Amino acid sequence: MSHQTVIVLDFGGQYNQLIARRVRECGVYCEVRPCTTPLAELRTMDPIGIIFTGGPSSVYLDRSPKVDAQIFTWGVPILGICYGCQLMAHLLGGRVVPAQQDAAREYGKTDTAFDTGCTLFQGLPESGVTWMSHGDYMEKVPEGFTLAARSAACPNAAIADEARRLYGVQFHPEVNHTQHGTDMIRRFLYGACGAAGDWTMEDYRRTAVQALREKIGGGRVLLALSGGVDSSVAAALLAEAVGEQLTCVFVDHGLLRKDEGDQVERAFSPWAMNFVRVDAEGRFLDKLAGVEEPERKRRIIGGEFIRVFEEEARKVGAVDFLAQGTIYPDVIESGAGDAAVIKSHHNVGGLPDCVDFREIVEPLRLLFKDEVRQLGRELGLPEYLVARQPFPGPGLAIRVIGEVTRDKLSMLREADAIFREEMARSGQERQLSQFFAALTNMRSVGVMGDGRTYDYAVALRAVTTDDFMTADWARIPYELLDRVSVRIVNEVKGVNRVLYDITSKPPGTVEYE
Image (cartoon, rainbow, N blue to C red; front, side):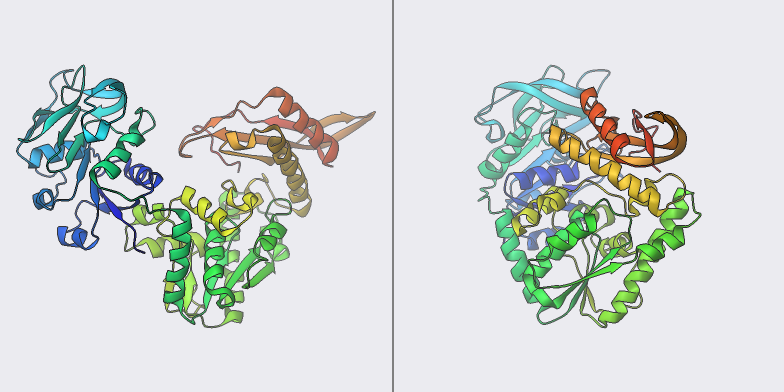
């Protein structure tokens, strides 16, 4: 694919993926590479610009990550962020030292003044809030650099050498806490790098389809389709590229939400592909009979999924390519050389021995999650699938506390469907990160009409989060909770009580098992 490229060199910063996402949001293709990548290899990528990330080290220490100083003579525009800014100063003759006491040491939101004559800040307000996180200080900036921003504690919050198109910012423009931060990145891309903005999802779809056709040729492709966003978009892209050469095996383990299996099958009806839906509910429930411990449930379901997939793969026979829904964060986190192995374990529990294939194909490995969703919409997949919330691989089995039975799954499906329907109707659906119903293993006395009941309690769970590492319980309007509760106890046989979980993560988890 012939896109202009920006390289993000990673020095151990926690925001490396976020920087890449911001660049792509500006319409420019971007890849994250480790700072140890040889300069010769970087040159082969022909980037229009390079961004140095932040990092936890101090540039003056012997073991701190460095970069070949020849990169500054290349002529490619460079933006250094936090550690990246200090590294640029250090390698070009400046001096970086530990901040003394509270002087020049800054953490959190900081009032900052900008020189709007600098390319990074042209057209932006002369002052604003930036997000600082540094304990070192540029005591001396390199020759040729001017000061382009300042704060009360730091006179060199940004530096610039316009002649060489080298820029450094002590703050983090990629985070939302920095006002106009994305605009600053955009100024670097378009003002300093001369970006054309040729990274669009329409263009990606077109070029990706062509690349897949060239790679696969007349070969056959096999994909394990879970119905999740990544595997579904990968399937749609491959179907558009090679049609009947693709076989998708959709293992319906009977643990999906209400009508979800039918929705997945219906979503792929427009494409001329081989869609194999395996009704395996009975064998999964047989394996789960009498099992209550959640981790054991997971192991049983994962193992059985592999066996079912392998059985279907044998029927397909030899294929040329095994397709996987690997996305770009997987590549970054696991390393370019290991991504395929790690992701295969995630998708199908390891590479199946019974499948005779010569190569793995990963059509989404260049995309972030939000970009995958955009591509899905571009390909015409329905919104209910593209916008699907995170859903555990073991499905509803872990949202049924205790033993999993058909009756319990039926109760849970109906209760969950009511909750989701009312959330969508109220407009709350898009404001929350994840929400669902779980069937507790608790039964209690209730009264319906003039009779006594002894039925199950349903727990509702809704959270807001940025990263799913931590989460807060969602403050859903009481009126909405009331409607959901009334409907569940009236419409779902076997349920007489509805609870709302107000536990954050930690100490709880997002899921309910």
